[in-house]
Length: 140
Image (cartoon, rainbow, N blue to C red; front, side, top):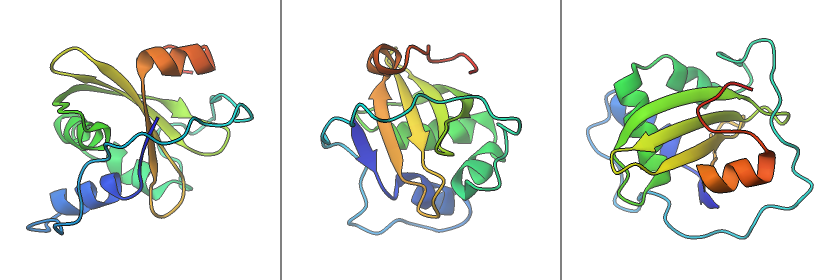
């Protein structure tokens, strides 16, 4: 699991007119400790596309697919060049769950927390499916 606290909000700011990002900002690439078993799997919510409680998700949904793919790939890191972004749904905690396929074929699940920072958690789709019993690239 990889955490990227500022990747999505800063990438969105960059696409919205900032000319450059600070030097200390880089894609998340370090391994974080495994999540606790108490985390509930995502569930479907009535307004999955635009949750007013998740400003980063709202902004990401407003972008064209190409920009969504670039931002999600930036959150993934690992040299991912995003080609297929897919919004899966909203989890119990209000996190938006996305899938992204990279040009080299790897697929990742990206969770965007509902807080103002838009913290991200990234997992390979195989790990995501094993832990949640949900498939990437499918609505829940």
